[in-house]
Amino acid sequence: MSNRASGSRWQAIGVGAVTILAGILIFLLWNWIQGAKAFGKVAPLTVIFDNALNLQPGADVRLAGLKIGEVRGISLTETRQARVELAIERDQFHKIDQNDEFVISTGGLLPQPYVEIRPRRSAKGEMMPPTAPLQPGATITQNAHTESLEQILPDAQRLVRSLTET
Image: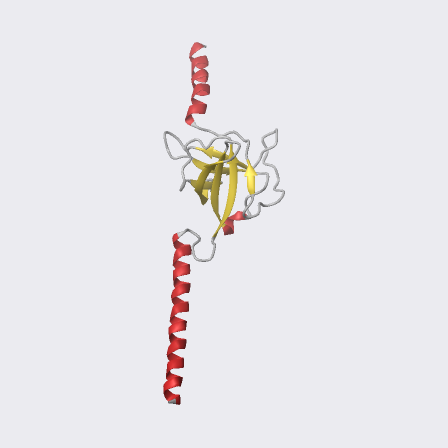
């Protein structure tokens, strides 16, 4: 009888171990599906813009022209501004300075808008030295200009007109 009780105990331990392993696998799979890539290879950053300018979830986040993250979500704040949730690669996060500018840009004729991170420049146009890196989870209110074809086109038309008139 004791052999039978001992066997039942080992069977229960085996079932418990399989259940725990299955739970861990489901957790890892869920994180991978949600974009956390198993152990958090990305970190959140929130940027508040006056206007999202057709920015869409999945759009790139670029620093010096290189993709370092993506837009995860866009919503409205209570003050009717655009809250843009970014996912930045953790190993790139330390390269973003708290003085950097976040701009919604387009790369040419009708491409998808993306978030560009630019180092701030002095009045003379020189790149300002870094002060302190941003921390994951930070929220930045960005009042910097955003660039879109609709905004640039009137200035370009005036420039062409002035050139053809002379």
